[in-house]
Amino acid sequence: MAATPLDAEVGIVGTGTTGSMLSWQLARRGVGALAFEQFAPGHDRGAVGGETRLFRLAYAEGAQYVPLLRDSLRLWRELEAESGADILTQCGGLAIGDPAAEYLAGLIDSVHRTGVAVEVLSKGEAAQRYPQHRLRDGEVAVLDEQAGFLRCEQAVLSATRVAERLGARVLRYTEVTDIVEDADNVQLRTPERTYRVGQVVVCAGAWASRFLPERLAAAVDPRRVLLTWFGTENIDDYRPERFPIFIHHGGTAHIYGTPTVDDVMVKVAGAVVSHSVPDPAAVDRRHSSAEVCTIADAVRRMLPGLHPHPLRTDAFTDLYTSDGHPLVGRVGAGRVVLATGHSGRGFKFATGLAAVVADLLTGTADPRYEFMSPHRLA
Image 1 (spheres, helix red, strand yellow):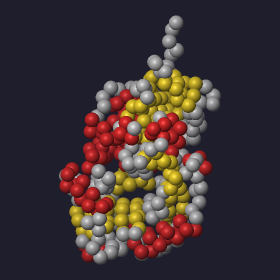
Image 2 (cartoon, helix red, strand yellow):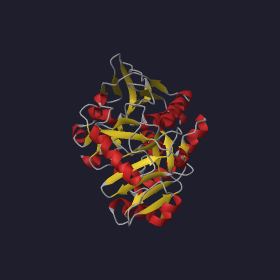
Image 3 (cartoon, one colour):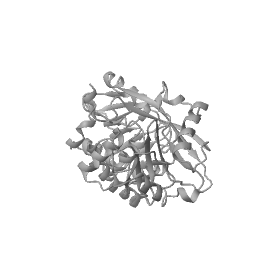
Image 4 (cartoon, helix red, strand yellow):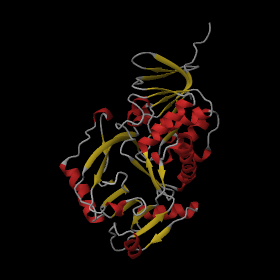
């Protein structure tokens, strides 16, 4: 009896941060890819919306990410060349805080171990060069000149467009309801029909929990993450050439942000801690009065040139893991690959991570990224 023909070599569940980049990476290698998106690429319900995401090489979250970030920088530029779109603006980045506290100490250790070039500015030097920020006594600013911001929706649309041009198929408004791994294929069930692929990659973000083995589902947490935008009377002071991206750990408050991209507002977020949501499809996009007051108070103290009451608010979702590292690797009998659980930090290295996953699918696992293996949480 003849085997049922496959619909594609690789199925991709979700075309957001990682799924869109993986579609592009597989298509440029000539691997047949079929991507499923319950909405449409670039939508604002998952971890992509909000205009910008930070990119940086000076990375406090671990020196083990720096090779991935360097590869991602190269691949972001390749995506720009192939799509003709402007995606990454390298305007520099500031990490501000107490150099003895956990975040800055981790960042300084990371750059020493990886050779990432930075400049450490005292409080006085930072005030002279970047007067938009208010530093507390004892704080410093670490300047990473290779940092910048990514236009997240544009990146996803560009990767998807190039992938489709190279032969990938993207099924929009097609929800995968179940994944069944058989001896010789994987079945992807949708309300309309069942598709068969050789391997499948789960890139579904906050929606990925339903597809995880039970032991992993217990170690992840879909969360709601808040974003806010602020006005100012001096927008010229917040353009990319004057206002690098930043992360400021200021004692009791933590904020991050990007320069203006619309000549009207400046994006600042982070003061309100993300929290769990039972259903990522039913997230409240509005902010409570308490949430608005929390970010407004942080902006008032740390960015005095901005009007502290936000002009725009929004929320997105992402899947957080118990240790903050992504889930990247094979599970089950080996035909299912996870590439999810980025814990709010995955966009900057999405191109590099997609290349790592594409290598894994075609037979080569990079041992440098074993720390992301799902089996660590077993």
